[in-house]
Length: 338
Image (tube, rainbow, N blue to C red; front, side):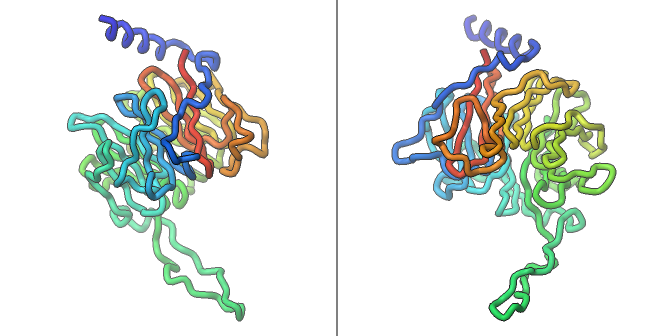
């Protein structure tokens, strides 16, 4: 009975109108394992499992994905997880709960168990070359001033940055650091289609991370067009549906829960948007220009409740907010829902 009442109260809270005062920053909630002075160089993401465990990706080859308990205590590292998960999600499905994410350097897309075991891997070659960028002419010179030929010149490449999974199991992956196309695969990993890009009508700049927006029927894709400072909606078939919000501080990460979309802005803020795209709460706003939108901000100037470069965002079941930073030392914020 108690668990049923708690679930009802949690659901009610998530459906009520949100305000910034509804969340409170929690200081030093993450407890690192012995011998680890910092989380590690972070250019990745964060996700929460159905058990409330918090998964954080770093660029550490020995601890590429670290797992923390709901109270912040370190639990384990995933031994087989890559050290270049730029964006990943956790999804619970009929056949289990899995991690899905693109490797930024490895140029593949992975499905892993929560223990880090590989279930499925999609290579970049599954994406047609017409939707990729090509390596340009080399600009490097030798001691004589002669151009050093790049053996990869003219080759197609991807720089995959984020993804999400639709309720039917389809994968949507964005090539944010290259072509700004979205690539769609079915649940078995078979390529379906690509859409988006830097030309009209999309005019994307850096389509950094995306989420399936389940607040709408049919579902949509909500996208962070980072350098254009906007969040946009696409249909699952790739139709541009419109701008959700603009003039943000370089939106870099996004997730959806209940009535709200949570946006991590690498320029120094975390915003909560309602279904109409209205800003209903803004957390962690940092107006110190030297501290934001870079990965060099040092721990000695960190302040509880002030973000520097949000690069990944997540909710837990209770509506608490987790924010992973772009930072060489590694930092994760927690804002508890009151």
